[in-house]
Amino acid sequence: MAEEKKGFFKRLVSGLTKTRENIVSSIDSIFSGYSSIDDDFYEEIEEILVMGDLGINATNNIIEDLKRQVAEKKIKDPQECKKLLMDSIKAQMAVGEAAYEFENRKSVVLVIGVNGVGKTTSVGKLAGKLKDQGKKVVLAAADTFRAAAGEQLTQWANRAGVELIGGQAGADPASVVYDAIAAAKARNADVLLCDTAGRLHNKKNLMDELHKIYRIIEREYPEAYLETLVVLDGTTGQNALLQARQFNEVADVTGIILTKLDGTAKGGIAVAIESELDIPVKYIGVGESIDDLQKFNSDEFVNALFDFKEE
Ligand SMILES: Nc1nc2c(ncn2[C@@H]2O[C@H](COP(=O)(O)OP(=O)(O)OP(=O)(O)O)[C@@H](O)[C@H]2O)c(=O)[nH]1
Ligand SMILES: [Mg+2]
Image 1 (cartoon, rainbow, N blue to C red):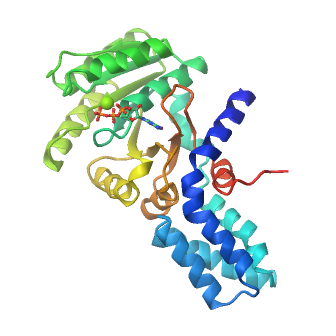
Image 2: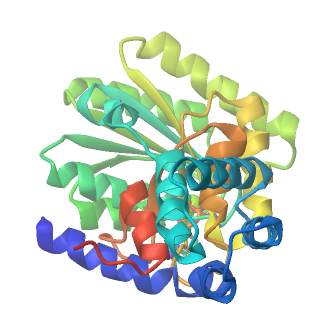
Image 3: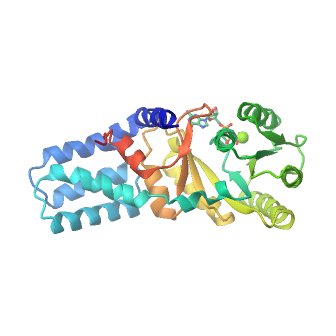
């Protein structure tokens, strides 16, 4: 377990290389380039954070926090601001254990998101993780829109060693969820993970589909703890934020899975999502294999981003 974590941290550090080059190296040059802390210094940091996709809210908070601490601690050396800045981002993004309540309850996890962001892959990875924790997991292949989707999820189910309930291509996704709930109850499953289709033509369509699924869950499995995770592609920057906002309008989103942090220059979006929408990033993906998904840990994330090694 410790080994696995260490491996993940390494992948995170390397995955965030482009984001680091995009944000951190510019910030570093400001810390070392300025000899005193003045308005220009703050303005330059502010600009980099905004350009680095951290969003206005988070940036303002970080700058305010920095100014307050500099005043309180009477800091004179710009270099000392780095640690303060990191701590400020960490604090803003901290996710408490309560965010993972569904892992310890009888729960239904609905995984939604636009096409290609990594829903099916994330469902597969999450199934593997929960299975490793000794949980009984059932997967619902509720993406009946794409013919190959069921096959793709079946492979993940096999890899993770969990059961899958599917439907014919073109079948009603809500009916697949209905069948999967029956199976989850019959087998006394802990977590029912539902993969959904990313290709719903418009907002009305998506809303109708989701509401139908929610109705089935409420009616058939009211005792289950309901978690709705939106999957966002970390390479899409501001677009990901827009998607999260849109899904939040049609569903009661409880968390984000941010994928493809390996190789994006736009990893700063993780900070923006949290502060602009007040929805926690609960999991991050840094690759395509089953171990490449972990709970989001703000300390780890910011340390990896700044390539900072804890003593
Ligand atoms: N590098 C990288 N690739 C990922 C990650 N997560 C998913 N992918 C890849 O992204 C592609 C799309 O993933 P899927 O899981 O099929 O995405 P989806 O949202 O289910 O797509 P649709 O069902 O078509 O809407 C696949 O090639 C995955 O291997 C990640 O964290 N890192
Ligand atoms: Mg899919």
